[in-house]
Image (cartoon, rainbow, N blue to C red):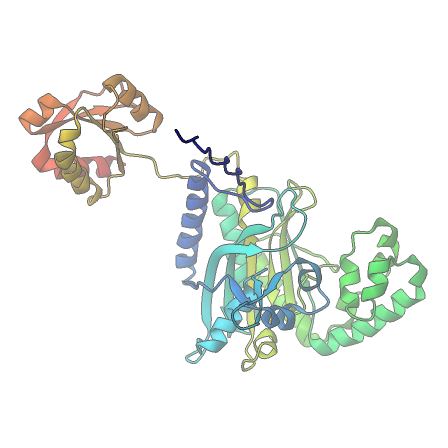
Amino acid sequence: MTDSVTAPKAEKLAAIKGMNDILPPDSARWEALEDNVRSLMRAYAYENIRTPIVEHTALFVRGLGEVTDIVEKEMYSFEDKLNGDRLTLRPENTAGVVRAAIEHSLLYNGGKRLYYMGPMFRHERPQRGRYRQFHQIGAEALGFGGPEVDAEVILMAHALCQRLGIADVELQINSLGQPGERNAHRAALIAHFEAHHDALDAEAKRRLHLNPLRLLDSKNPAMQDVITAAPKLMDFLGEASKAHLAAVRGMLDANGVAHTVNHRLVRGMDYYNLTVFEFVTMQLGAQGTICAGGRYDYLMEQVGGKPAPAVGWAMGMERVLELIAQQALPVAALDAYALVTDVAFFPRVHQCLEALRQRGVRVQMQAAVDGALPGMKAQFKRADNSGARFALIFGADEMADGVVTIKALRDPQAAQLRQPLADVAQWAQSLQSAA
Protein backbone atom coordinates (compact mmCIF):
# COMPACT_ATOMS: atom_id res chain seq x y z
CA MET A 1 0.00 0.00 0.00
CA THR A 2 1.48 3.33 -1.00
CA ASP A 3 1.29 6.40 1.20
CA SER A 4 -0.76 9.21 -0.24
CA VAL A 5 1.20 12.37 -0.90
CA THR A 6 -0.54 15.59 0.02
CA ALA A 7 0.47 18.52 -2.14
CA PRO A 8 1.38 21.66 -0.20
CA LYS A 9 -1.36 24.25 -0.10
CA ALA A 10 -0.77 27.02 -2.61
CA GLU A 11 0.01 30.40 -1.14
CA LYS A 12 -2.87 32.84 -1.33
CA LEU A 13 -2.03 35.72 -3.64
CA ALA A 14 -3.33 39.26 -3.32
CA ALA A 15 -3.32 42.36 -5.52
CA ILE A 16 -0.29 44.63 -5.33
CA LYS A 17 -0.76 47.39 -2.78
CA GLY A 18 -2.04 50.49 -4.53
CA MET A 19 -3.35 48.51 -7.52
CA ASN A 20 -6.97 47.80 -6.74
CA ASP A 21 -9.63 45.43 -8.03
CA ILE A 22 -12.86 47.11 -9.15
CA LEU A 23 -15.70 44.73 -8.38
CA PRO A 24 -19.48 44.68 -8.82
CA PRO A 25 -21.54 46.53 -7.78
CA ASP A 26 -18.90 49.32 -7.58
CA SER A 27 -17.88 48.65 -11.18
CA ALA A 28 -21.36 49.80 -12.24
CA ARG A 29 -20.49 53.26 -10.89
CA TRP A 30 -17.35 53.28 -13.03
CA GLU A 31 -19.41 52.34 -16.08
CA ALA A 32 -21.90 55.11 -15.32
CA LEU A 33 -19.05 57.64 -15.06
CA GLU A 34 -17.60 56.39 -18.35
CA ASP A 35 -21.03 56.67 -20.01
CA ASN A 36 -21.30 60.28 -18.82
CA VAL A 37 -17.86 61.05 -20.23
CA ARG A 38 -18.65 59.50 -23.62
CA SER A 39 -21.90 61.43 -23.83
CA LEU A 40 -20.14 64.70 -22.98
CA MET A 41 -17.33 64.09 -25.46
CA ARG A 42 -19.88 63.44 -28.21
CA ALA A 43 -21.50 66.79 -27.41
CA TYR A 44 -18.12 68.54 -27.86
CA ALA A 45 -17.24 66.41 -30.94
CA TYR A 46 -14.12 64.86 -29.35
CA GLU A 47 -13.08 61.46 -30.72
CA ASN A 48 -11.73 58.53 -28.74
CA ILE A 49 -8.04 57.54 -28.87
CA ARG A 50 -6.50 54.48 -27.20
CA THR A 51 -2.73 54.34 -26.82
CA PRO A 52 -0.48 51.57 -25.40
CA ILE A 53 0.07 51.31 -21.67
CA VAL A 54 3.82 50.80 -22.28
CA GLU A 55 5.89 53.41 -24.11
CA HIS A 56 9.60 54.07 -24.63
CA THR A 57 11.07 55.69 -21.51
CA ALA A 58 12.59 58.45 -23.65
CA LEU A 59 9.10 59.70 -24.51
CA PHE A 60 8.43 60.69 -20.92
CA VAL A 61 11.95 61.92 -20.19
CA ARG A 62 11.78 64.26 -23.19
CA GLY A 63 8.16 65.23 -22.72
CA LEU A 64 7.84 65.63 -18.96
CA GLY A 65 11.38 66.82 -18.23
CA GLU A 66 14.23 65.04 -16.47
CA VAL A 67 13.96 67.13 -13.29
CA THR A 68 10.36 66.26 -12.40
CA ASP A 69 9.06 64.06 -9.60
CA ILE A 70 7.44 61.74 -12.13
CA VAL A 71 10.63 61.03 -14.09
CA GLU A 72 12.99 61.07 -11.11
CA LYS A 73 10.96 59.06 -8.61
CA GLU A 74 7.64 57.70 -9.83
CA MET A 75 7.95 55.91 -13.18
CA TYR A 76 7.77 52.13 -13.48
CA SER A 77 10.63 51.62 -15.94
CA PHE A 78 12.32 48.40 -17.02
CA GLU A 79 14.52 46.90 -19.70
CA ASP A 80 12.83 44.84 -22.40
CA LYS A 81 14.40 41.36 -22.19
CA LEU A 82 13.82 40.85 -25.91
CA ASN A 83 15.85 43.75 -27.29
CA GLY A 84 17.14 45.79 -24.36
CA ASP A 85 14.84 48.77 -24.97
CA ARG A 86 14.11 50.98 -21.96
CA LEU A 87 10.33 50.92 -21.48
CA THR A 88 7.95 52.58 -19.01
CA LEU A 89 4.38 52.02 -17.86
CA ARG A 90 2.72 55.29 -18.77
CA PRO A 91 2.56 57.71 -15.81
CA GLU A 92 0.29 60.05 -17.84
CA ASN A 93 -1.14 59.97 -21.35
CA THR A 94 -0.61 63.37 -22.97
CA ALA A 95 2.86 62.39 -24.20
CA GLY A 96 1.47 59.13 -25.60
CA VAL A 97 -1.33 60.92 -27.45
CA VAL A 98 1.17 63.36 -28.94
CA ARG A 99 3.47 60.49 -29.96
CA ALA A 100 0.54 58.74 -31.67
CA ALA A 101 -0.49 61.94 -33.45
CA ILE A 102 3.03 62.35 -34.82
CA GLU A 103 3.50 58.70 -35.74
CA HIS A 104 0.19 58.48 -37.63
CA SER A 105 0.14 62.03 -39.06
CA LEU A 106 -3.18 62.79 -37.38
CA LEU A 107 -2.81 66.53 -37.97
CA TYR A 108 -2.24 66.18 -41.73
CA ASN A 109 -5.69 67.58 -42.52
CA GLY A 110 -5.95 69.97 -39.57
CA GLY A 111 -6.43 69.89 -35.83
CA LYS A 112 -7.79 66.94 -33.85
CA ARG A 113 -9.96 66.87 -30.75
CA LEU A 114 -9.34 63.62 -28.85
CA TYR A 115 -10.21 62.01 -25.52
CA TYR A 116 -9.14 58.90 -23.63
CA MET A 117 -9.91 56.89 -20.50
CA GLY A 118 -7.61 54.34 -18.94
CA PRO A 119 -5.03 53.28 -16.33
CA MET A 120 -1.80 55.14 -15.51
CA PHE A 121 1.02 54.00 -13.23
CA ARG A 122 3.24 55.81 -10.73
CA HIS A 123 5.55 54.25 -8.16
CA GLU A 124 4.64 56.10 -4.99
CA ARG A 125 3.31 55.45 -1.52
CA PRO A 126 -0.41 54.65 -1.83
CA GLN A 127 -2.71 57.01 0.07
CA ARG A 128 -6.20 58.42 -0.18
CA GLY A 129 -6.87 59.45 -3.77
CA ARG A 130 -3.35 58.44 -4.87
CA TYR A 131 -2.64 54.93 -6.12
CA ARG A 132 0.10 53.10 -8.00
CA GLN A 133 -2.40 52.16 -10.69
CA PHE A 134 -4.91 54.94 -11.14
CA HIS A 135 -7.28 55.90 -13.92
CA GLN A 136 -7.65 59.13 -15.84
CA ILE A 137 -10.06 60.75 -18.24
CA GLY A 138 -8.27 63.09 -20.61
CA ALA A 139 -9.10 65.53 -23.41
CA GLU A 140 -6.51 66.83 -25.86
CA ALA A 141 -7.09 69.44 -28.58
CA LEU A 142 -4.11 69.18 -30.96
CA GLY A 143 -3.29 71.77 -33.62
CA PHE A 144 -5.29 74.67 -32.13
CA GLY A 145 -3.47 77.75 -30.81
CA GLY A 146 -6.20 80.22 -29.88
CA PRO A 147 -7.56 81.08 -26.43
CA GLU A 148 -11.02 79.98 -27.55
CA VAL A 149 -9.88 76.34 -27.46
CA ASP A 150 -8.33 76.84 -24.01
CA ALA A 151 -11.75 78.08 -22.90
CA GLU A 152 -13.44 75.17 -24.68
CA VAL A 153 -11.53 72.48 -22.79
CA ILE A 154 -12.03 74.29 -19.48
CA LEU A 155 -15.76 74.65 -20.16
CA MET A 156 -15.87 70.93 -20.99
CA ALA A 157 -14.25 69.98 -17.67
CA HIS A 158 -16.61 72.35 -15.86
CA ALA A 159 -19.60 70.81 -17.65
CA LEU A 160 -18.49 67.33 -16.59
CA CYS A 161 -18.27 68.44 -12.95
CA GLN A 162 -21.78 69.87 -13.21
CA ARG A 163 -23.13 66.79 -14.96
CA LEU A 164 -21.74 64.60 -12.16
CA GLY A 165 -23.03 66.90 -9.43
CA ILE A 166 -19.56 67.67 -8.02
CA ALA A 167 -19.95 70.62 -5.67
CA ASP A 168 -17.44 72.88 -3.85
CA VAL A 169 -14.88 72.82 -6.66
CA GLU A 170 -12.73 75.88 -7.32
CA LEU A 171 -11.25 76.60 -10.74
CA GLN A 172 -7.77 78.10 -10.48
CA ILE A 173 -6.04 79.50 -13.56
CA ASN A 174 -2.65 81.02 -14.38
CA SER A 175 -0.37 81.75 -17.32
CA LEU A 176 3.16 80.36 -17.64
CA GLY A 177 3.84 82.65 -20.58
CA GLN A 178 6.28 81.75 -23.32
CA PRO A 179 9.80 80.30 -23.02
CA GLY A 180 11.59 83.67 -23.27
CA GLU A 181 9.39 85.14 -20.55
CA ARG A 182 9.93 82.11 -18.36
CA ASN A 183 13.68 82.32 -18.86
CA ALA A 184 13.72 85.90 -17.57
CA HIS A 185 11.53 84.86 -14.65
CA ARG A 186 13.78 81.83 -14.06
CA ALA A 187 16.85 84.05 -13.70
CA ALA A 188 15.00 86.28 -11.23
CA LEU A 189 13.83 83.24 -9.25
CA ILE A 190 17.34 81.84 -8.99
CA ALA A 191 18.65 85.17 -7.79
CA HIS A 192 15.85 85.43 -5.22
CA PHE A 193 16.29 81.93 -3.82
CA GLU A 194 20.09 82.22 -3.80
CA ALA A 195 19.68 85.29 -1.63
CA HIS A 196 17.70 83.08 0.80
CA HIS A 197 19.79 79.97 0.36
CA ASP A 198 19.81 79.11 4.07
CA ALA A 199 15.99 78.92 4.13
CA LEU A 200 15.87 76.25 1.41
CA ASP A 201 15.55 72.56 2.16
CA ALA A 202 17.82 69.97 0.52
CA GLU A 203 15.37 69.22 -2.31
CA ALA A 204 14.98 72.93 -3.13
CA LYS A 205 18.74 73.44 -3.19
CA ARG A 206 19.12 70.50 -5.57
CA ARG A 207 16.47 71.87 -7.93
CA LEU A 208 17.43 75.52 -7.72
CA HIS A 209 19.49 75.61 -10.91
CA LEU A 210 17.77 72.70 -12.63
CA ASN A 211 14.08 73.68 -12.35
CA PRO A 212 13.55 76.66 -10.03
CA LEU A 213 9.88 76.98 -11.03
CA ARG A 214 9.18 73.77 -9.11
CA LEU A 215 10.29 75.45 -5.86
CA LEU A 216 7.09 77.49 -6.01
CA ASP A 217 5.12 74.26 -5.62
CA SER A 218 6.91 73.22 -2.41
CA LYS A 219 4.68 72.36 0.54
CA ASN A 220 7.48 72.83 3.10
CA PRO A 221 6.05 75.23 5.73
CA ALA A 222 9.50 76.63 6.51
CA MET A 223 9.85 77.91 2.92
CA GLN A 224 6.47 79.55 2.48
CA ASP A 225 7.53 83.10 3.38
CA VAL A 226 10.42 82.93 0.90
CA ILE A 227 8.12 81.49 -1.77
CA THR A 228 5.46 84.15 -1.18
CA ALA A 229 8.06 86.88 -1.66
CA ALA A 230 9.45 85.31 -4.85
CA PRO A 231 9.13 87.19 -8.17
CA LYS A 232 5.83 86.46 -9.90
CA LEU A 233 5.85 85.14 -13.44
CA MET A 234 2.91 87.41 -14.25
CA ASP A 235 5.24 90.41 -13.91
CA PHE A 236 7.44 89.02 -16.70
CA LEU A 237 4.69 88.27 -19.22
CA GLY A 238 4.56 90.18 -22.49
CA GLU A 239 1.44 91.77 -23.88
CA ALA A 240 0.57 88.76 -26.08
CA SER A 241 0.67 86.34 -23.15
CA LYS A 242 -1.40 88.67 -21.00
CA ALA A 243 -3.93 89.13 -23.79
CA HIS A 244 -4.20 85.34 -24.24
CA LEU A 245 -5.01 84.85 -20.54
CA ALA A 246 -7.44 87.79 -20.56
CA ALA A 247 -9.26 86.29 -23.55
CA VAL A 248 -9.61 82.91 -21.85
CA ARG A 249 -10.90 84.54 -18.68
CA GLY A 250 -13.34 86.66 -20.66
CA MET A 251 -14.88 83.59 -22.26
CA LEU A 252 -15.17 81.88 -18.87
CA ASP A 253 -16.85 85.00 -17.46
CA ALA A 254 -19.25 85.10 -20.40
CA ASN A 255 -20.32 81.54 -19.52
CA GLY A 256 -20.67 82.23 -15.81
CA VAL A 257 -17.71 80.01 -14.81
CA ALA A 258 -16.21 81.40 -11.63
CA HIS A 259 -12.43 81.21 -11.33
CA THR A 260 -9.45 82.71 -9.52
CA VAL A 261 -5.95 83.52 -10.72
CA ASN A 262 -3.37 81.56 -8.73
CA HIS A 263 0.08 83.02 -9.45
CA ARG A 264 1.76 80.00 -7.83
CA LEU A 265 0.05 77.47 -10.08
CA VAL A 266 2.85 75.95 -12.17
CA ARG A 267 1.88 72.28 -12.86
CA GLY A 268 4.28 69.34 -12.58
CA MET A 269 5.32 68.75 -16.20
CA ASP A 270 7.83 70.83 -18.15
CA TYR A 271 5.79 70.90 -21.35
CA TYR A 272 3.24 73.57 -20.36
CA ASN A 273 3.14 77.18 -21.61
CA LEU A 274 0.56 79.97 -21.45
CA THR A 275 -2.72 78.79 -19.87
CA VAL A 276 -2.61 76.30 -16.98
CA PHE A 277 -5.54 75.43 -14.72
CA GLU A 278 -6.75 73.13 -11.95
CA PHE A 279 -10.14 72.18 -10.51
CA VAL A 280 -9.54 71.89 -6.77
CA THR A 281 -11.70 70.62 -3.91
CA MET A 282 -11.12 70.70 -0.16
CA GLN A 283 -13.06 67.45 0.33
CA LEU A 284 -10.15 65.10 -0.48
CA GLY A 285 -7.50 66.44 1.88
CA ALA A 286 -4.01 66.85 0.41
CA GLN A 287 -5.03 65.25 -2.90
CA GLY A 288 -7.52 67.99 -3.73
CA THR A 289 -6.84 68.43 -7.45
CA ILE A 290 -9.38 66.43 -9.45
CA CYS A 291 -8.70 67.87 -12.90
CA ALA A 292 -5.68 69.72 -14.25
CA GLY A 293 -4.25 70.78 -17.56
CA GLY A 294 -3.16 73.57 -19.81
CA ARG A 295 -1.52 74.54 -23.06
CA TYR A 296 1.57 72.70 -24.36
CA ASP A 297 2.54 74.25 -27.67
CA TYR A 298 6.09 72.85 -27.76
CA LEU A 299 5.57 69.20 -26.83
CA MET A 300 5.07 68.05 -30.43
CA GLU A 301 8.51 69.33 -31.35
CA GLN A 302 10.10 67.98 -28.16
CA VAL A 303 9.12 64.42 -29.01
CA GLY A 304 10.15 64.59 -32.65
CA GLY A 305 7.22 66.05 -34.57
CA LYS A 306 6.56 69.24 -36.47
CA PRO A 307 5.67 72.22 -34.23
CA ALA A 308 1.96 72.35 -33.44
CA PRO A 309 0.01 74.01 -30.62
CA ALA A 310 -2.11 71.96 -28.23
CA VAL A 311 -4.12 72.17 -25.02
CA GLY A 312 -5.77 69.57 -22.79
CA TRP A 313 -6.52 68.20 -19.34
CA ALA A 314 -6.67 65.01 -17.31
CA MET A 315 -9.10 64.08 -14.53
CA GLY A 316 -8.56 61.43 -11.87
CA MET A 317 -11.40 58.91 -11.98
CA GLU A 318 -10.84 57.53 -8.47
CA ARG A 319 -10.98 61.02 -7.01
CA VAL A 320 -14.13 61.89 -8.91
CA LEU A 321 -15.84 58.68 -7.79
CA GLU A 322 -14.87 59.35 -4.19
CA LEU A 323 -16.39 62.83 -4.41
CA ILE A 324 -19.67 61.47 -5.71
CA ALA A 325 -19.68 58.30 -3.59
CA GLN A 326 -22.91 59.33 -1.87
CA GLN A 327 -24.69 60.15 -5.10
CA ALA A 328 -26.85 57.75 -7.06
CA LEU A 329 -25.21 57.70 -10.46
CA PRO A 330 -27.65 56.63 -13.18
CA VAL A 331 -26.69 52.96 -13.27
CA ALA A 332 -28.68 50.85 -15.75
CA ALA A 333 -31.11 48.73 -13.73
CA LEU A 334 -31.91 45.10 -14.49
CA ASP A 335 -35.22 44.94 -16.33
CA ALA A 336 -36.07 41.29 -15.74
CA TYR A 337 -34.90 38.14 -13.96
CA ALA A 338 -35.85 34.77 -15.45
CA LEU A 339 -36.94 32.01 -13.05
CA VAL A 340 -36.77 28.46 -14.47
CA THR A 341 -38.13 25.31 -12.82
CA ASP A 342 -36.53 22.64 -15.00
CA VAL A 343 -33.18 22.52 -16.81
CA ALA A 344 -34.98 20.93 -19.77
CA PHE A 345 -36.66 24.29 -20.40
CA PHE A 346 -33.38 26.15 -21.00
CA PRO A 347 -33.39 25.94 -24.84
CA ARG A 348 -36.81 27.61 -25.09
CA VAL A 349 -35.96 30.05 -22.27
CA HIS A 350 -32.78 31.14 -24.07
CA GLN A 351 -34.76 31.66 -27.26
CA CYS A 352 -37.18 33.96 -25.46
CA LEU A 353 -34.52 35.89 -23.56
CA GLU A 354 -32.42 36.45 -26.69
CA ALA A 355 -35.47 37.95 -28.37
CA LEU A 356 -35.90 40.31 -25.40
CA ARG A 357 -32.23 41.29 -25.36
CA GLN A 358 -32.32 42.12 -29.04
CA ARG A 359 -35.06 44.62 -28.21
CA GLY A 360 -33.02 46.34 -25.50
CA VAL A 361 -34.35 44.51 -22.44
CA ARG A 362 -31.68 43.88 -19.79
CA VAL A 363 -32.38 40.39 -18.47
CA GLN A 364 -30.59 37.80 -16.38
CA MET A 365 -31.40 34.09 -16.11
CA GLN A 366 -31.27 31.78 -13.10
CA ALA A 367 -28.48 29.24 -13.63
CA ALA A 368 -28.32 25.65 -12.46
CA VAL A 369 -25.97 24.59 -9.66
CA ASP A 370 -24.41 21.15 -10.13
CA GLY A 371 -27.09 20.37 -12.71
CA ALA A 372 -30.03 21.32 -10.48
CA LEU A 373 -32.08 24.49 -10.06
CA PRO A 374 -32.94 26.12 -6.70
CA GLY A 375 -36.54 26.10 -5.53
CA MET A 376 -38.88 28.86 -6.59
CA LYS A 377 -38.74 30.57 -3.19
CA ALA A 378 -34.95 30.89 -3.44
CA GLN A 379 -35.18 32.03 -7.03
CA PHE A 380 -37.72 34.73 -6.18
CA LYS A 381 -35.39 35.96 -3.43
CA ARG A 382 -32.53 36.19 -5.92
CA ALA A 383 -34.76 37.96 -8.41
CA ASP A 384 -35.77 40.50 -5.78
CA ASN A 385 -32.15 41.04 -4.66
CA SER A 386 -31.08 41.59 -8.25
CA GLY A 387 -33.05 44.83 -8.40
CA ALA A 388 -34.98 43.65 -11.44
CA ARG A 389 -38.33 45.28 -12.17
CA PHE A 390 -39.97 42.03 -13.35
CA ALA A 391 -39.71 38.30 -12.78
CA LEU A 392 -40.17 36.08 -15.83
CA ILE A 393 -41.48 32.69 -14.72
CA PHE A 394 -40.80 29.67 -16.92
CA GLY A 395 -42.56 26.80 -15.14
CA ALA A 396 -44.12 23.53 -16.29
CA ASP A 397 -47.56 25.12 -16.82
CA GLU A 398 -46.05 27.98 -18.79
CA MET A 399 -44.04 25.66 -21.01
CA ALA A 400 -47.10 23.49 -21.66
CA ASP A 401 -49.12 26.54 -22.69
CA GLY A 402 -46.29 28.22 -24.64
CA VAL A 403 -46.28 31.35 -22.44
CA VAL A 404 -44.17 33.15 -19.86
CA THR A 405 -45.64 34.61 -16.67
CA ILE A 406 -44.52 38.19 -16.03
CA LYS A 407 -44.68 39.38 -12.42
CA ALA A 408 -43.90 42.97 -11.36
CA LEU A 409 -41.44 42.90 -8.44
CA ARG A 410 -41.58 46.59 -7.52
CA ASP A 411 -45.34 47.13 -7.81
CA PRO A 412 -47.34 44.67 -5.66
CA GLN A 413 -50.63 46.05 -7.05
CA ALA A 414 -49.76 45.19 -10.66
CA ALA A 415 -51.48 42.18 -12.17
CA GLN A 416 -49.48 39.23 -13.51
CA LEU A 417 -49.32 38.83 -17.29
CA ARG A 418 -49.11 35.70 -19.41
CA GLN A 419 -47.30 36.50 -22.63
CA PRO A 420 -46.94 34.03 -25.53
CA LEU A 421 -43.32 32.93 -25.93
CA ALA A 422 -43.57 33.49 -29.66
CA ASP A 423 -44.58 37.12 -29.18
CA VAL A 424 -42.44 38.71 -26.47
CA ALA A 425 -41.76 41.71 -28.73
CA GLN A 426 -45.06 43.32 -27.75
CA TRP A 427 -44.25 43.20 -24.05
CA ALA A 428 -40.65 44.34 -24.67
CA GLN A 429 -41.92 47.35 -26.61
CA SER A 430 -44.33 48.36 -23.84
CA LEU A 431 -41.55 47.92 -21.27
CA GLN A 432 -39.18 50.18 -23.19
CA SER A 433 -41.92 52.78 -23.70
CA ALA A 434 -42.54 52.92 -19.96
CA ALA A 435 -38.83 53.25 -19.08
